[in-house]
Image (tube, rainbow, N blue to C red):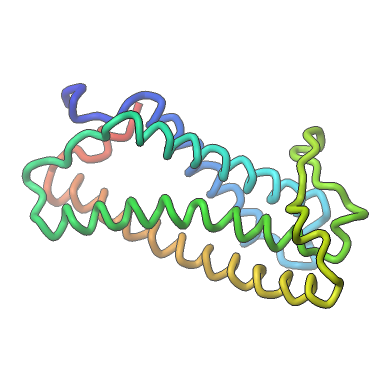
Length: 184
C-alpha cells in the first residue's frame, strides 16, 4: 500500500485511541450491572468519556487540516456515498455520546457534593448553567439527557457495526487491503 492511500500517522493513532477508549467504556457499562458499578467505575467511565470527547475534537481538527486518502477507485458510487455518510455520522455521534453524558452528569442531584475528578487526579468542571438549575428542573434534565445518552450509545453501536462490516467487506470480499489504510 502506497503512502498516498494511507491515513496519516496522527490520524491512525487518534482513530485507535478513540476506538479503544470507547470499547473500554462500553465494557464497563455492559459487564457491570447497576448494583456492581461502584463509584470508582462510574468515575472511570466519566473520565474516559471526557477523554474521548477531547480526542475526537483533536481528530476533527486534524482531519480539517489534513485531507484523508481517497477511497479506492473500485468502490461503487453508492459505497462511496455510504462510506462518507457513515464517517460523518460517526464523528457526530462520537461527539454526542460524551456530550450527552456530560449534560446528564451535570444535572445529577449530588453533583455539587461529588466533584468530577478525571482519573482520580484532574479536577473537571460540570456545566455551570445546568448545575444552577432548580432541583425539579435539574432532575427532569438529568432524566432526559440520560435517555439521550443511552440512545446515542445504541446509535454509536449501530454505526460502528456498519463501519466494521464495510471495512471487512472491502478487505475480504473486494480484496482492497482496506484495513492497511488505517493501520500502523
